[in-house]
Image (cartoon, rainbow, N blue to C red):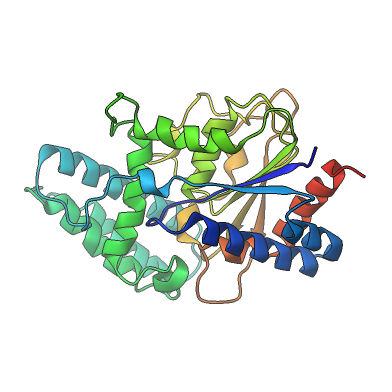
Length: 319
């Protein structure tokens, strides 16, 4: 039986799932060749040696059209969590910053997100989030890091993280959004075949939670640009607790790019305990050459990322 490679995407508006899978597969093949795995790259593309799948769930998110929501208690709760998420990332980035210009921008964004002695009227939370987003986009490179051209687009992407972690948005059968998303991922996992899972951004949180209920073997779990390091906004809302590596995972590699703002504090092994197999996340840094850093194809094309993925698949491929 051919091993499985399952990609789990992150935030973003709906796209054609087949087109996403093709781009990701080709980026990983490019990284494999750069790592000296030409045969493994060919196997990724031939469609027979490895069962490559994409767990697609972007179309499940509720659509509001604009990032600017109407003033209401529910909207203020959501915007408060968005502010907390950005504040978390700012504080983590500020703690590790040795650049005076960057630190100045981060401190300004922080003052916009958490002003002292100011009343918060209707809509004020969202205005603060958008203002802080515009400030952060003045950081060199950040405007293009995630393909964001405005703070509204940044907030729209971050809102999806919040929607998943809120455990709400029930459908007609009273099934929450996070459960429906995990069901999409679970459907692509084969309990009888070794499965390498490569997840990006919000997908790292989704995959982490899904794999805790997956009985099959996972020789390698790879997380890219993960927000799990956002302690207040993301980590404390994750399940199951206390956080530990999913039981079927045999090896976990976590990769971050210094210019990827979404990763916040990247060394998630600080808070995620090993599983019974002694598998725990091991964090490594990659440096992308180009404007867009957070998009997954830049991670996948890195030899340090693609090499271990192909090696894990080659071990599992029948002779």
